[in-house]
Amino acid sequence: MHSTEQPLFALLREYFIPISLPTKTNLLEEGQYSKHFYFVKQGVLRGWTLHEGKEVTFQFVFEGDFFCSIESFWYNKPSQYTLEALEPVELLALDKQQLNELMQKNIQILEAFTSYIIARLLTYQKMVIGRIKENPEKRYKQLQQIAPELIQRIPQHYIASYLGITPVSLSRIRNRR
Image (tube, rainbow, N blue to C red; front, side):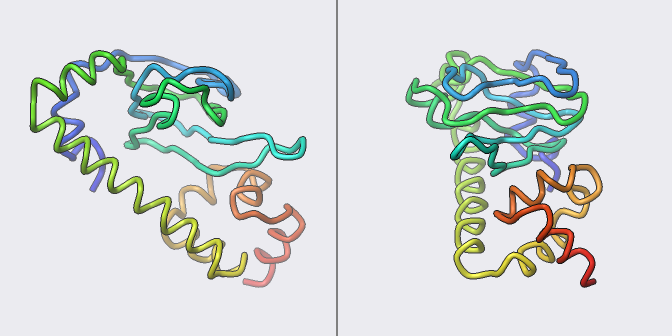
């Protein structure tokens, strides 16, 4: 189901404020504090962190996705990662304090938000288990099946980083088709 069809979007639609980001702009940098809950109307963001001096991609956020830096947003801690626009991005933003107030006043919003958080947790759980159980080639093929738009829109070196392999290894996997 596209997020604009989900109850959470319908319940929050009137409270969001629009934000535009040009390509290669960071919405949030590692070490900053996340104060907003976002919805992507257009474009794609990449979540990455530095490890041993290299950028490691762990997430892509596309149109129709909600997101926030959870630990920073909920616990007021510095974000552990950076969110970067890979193409021009149109966002809708909701301030943390306002979201908290809305959830306290409206049980439907709280329930819809809880459902969103559980779905995100399951997505991350599948990703972690996939990293443990599957080899890079199988992870790439699964990525092709579940997110073909990712393969078309994201530079290959970011996809390789996301899969936990080198760009050369990804090239070899793609050539085996």
